[in-house]
Length: 317
Image (cartoon, rainbow, N blue to C red; front, side):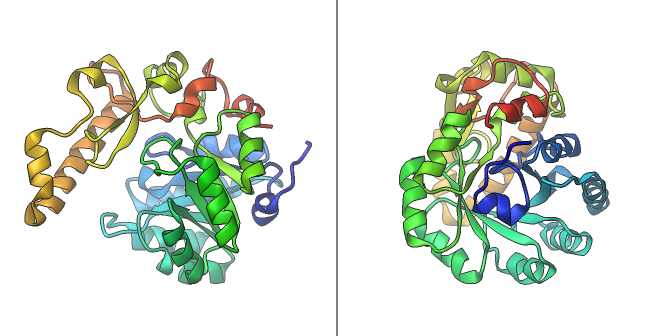
């Protein structure tokens, strides 16, 4: 297998500078195995497992499936909203994953507990200020989430974000968002990235556990059909602009706006909104109803068929 060497391939022991991004409800063991077998790194959100026992079983299965040139990791939400975070981190360190990607909070505990075990720590970042903070804590690389990413994305375009972080930080920068083919990946590397975290193109994979309707939507719609909505979690999130999304709109209501400005009520409103949004998103992902809210990014543009993970990776190498 031909390889493309960068700092990322050396860091994670992979053939190609690609991480299959962790996707809530989408990523699973079958996808990660296929990714590793094709010479890339692959990551799953710890939150995709309801119990710590299920997470441990998944890690054990992935460890057994590892092949030279592939690696796997887990994604941890590292703030108070994730009650399972301490137990998830303990499981990852105890059983041994290759890397951890942290999101939405301080990675300090992860860095302190994982690095002594030889586990690489990569941190989601959206700007230079936060990047400098996590670099000072000792993380191994920055996952630069730009304004082309799917789900909860950043606000800065890929080139500007990569160049700024590359010029001002001493650790490697991995781009997240805006990669739908090899040309896009090469572009990110030319800006100074050591590789890319790629998510949305893998939703329409045969191995993905989501509904056929969700996968087919990623084939039928394209970049022009991606819109930002505040209806899922209160935080802007990218979704496919289906007839249902058009019907309900993408802005919060006047009442939600007032409640979100009330300091005492704000966190409770957001918590309730987030819980409802996650329930609705789960239903949409696992079975088609008339209420379909499918999370995806503009990189579904190059998705022309539902294919195995192995075939999708060929698009990038």
